[in-house]
Length: 300
Image 1 (cartoon, one colour):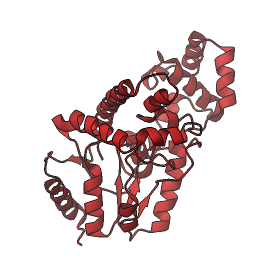
Image 2 (cartoon, rainbow, N blue to C red):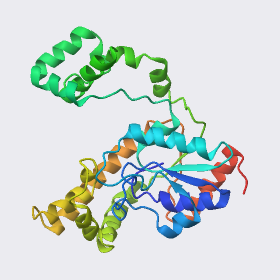
Image 3 (cartoon, rainbow, N blue to C red):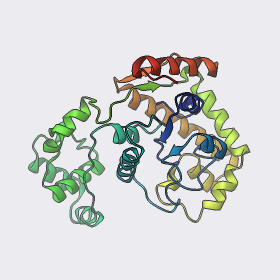
Image 4 (cartoon, rainbow, N blue to C red):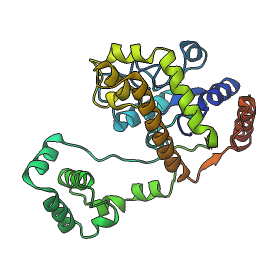
């Protein structure tokens, strides 16, 4: 696991090749077909040599959320079987935990949400939630109307208050980082080099044809896909809303913000063994391989 541009792909490919493993990508945007350059998908040659899963699942026009991802990933792992070695890799912490942990996702209903929005103002929704659940503020940021609205939607659909959901056995296991799928985790972090790597990689994406890629998808990107870092900014160029120079700088800035959020998310997970950063990719690969051999008794 690790932030974007941390150098995960090199390690993943080397480890998978060494141990005869297949790769399960936990990337929220690599699921979309055609979004290749901007999501840093592995090349066709790499995927021909090492089977990669959870990539190119749906058209870019589709809305494919973490619930869909969890269902499909778990079905896939069942089909691969317990004897197949699998390397789970990527930068989406929620998608990673959706696969390995007992995360459950509450149902949604756009009609009910729209009704709650139109019938009540923000203060009324907050009062309604606190009346239904006097301790809701301990598990929901009640100053955030979007979160209050979601809590009311779930309560309407399931009859469960936020406090009840938070105290369920599954929720307690998730907070304690008790895995549903036994695994060992390695964290990759580029440290002080992260921002430099982010900037360089995005420039390389532009040179590799990112603008043309986005232009070819511009009319068919779903709401979710169109918000992907890099795609959103380049869409502004195509629509004449900004210049390429400004779009590139904004994409770099947003990616650096993403790195910060990814670090915060992953650092909360006590199961992740963080590797000391080495500029030499071979040293990083050797360290990861040694850790896996020691912790999982894997041999080539």
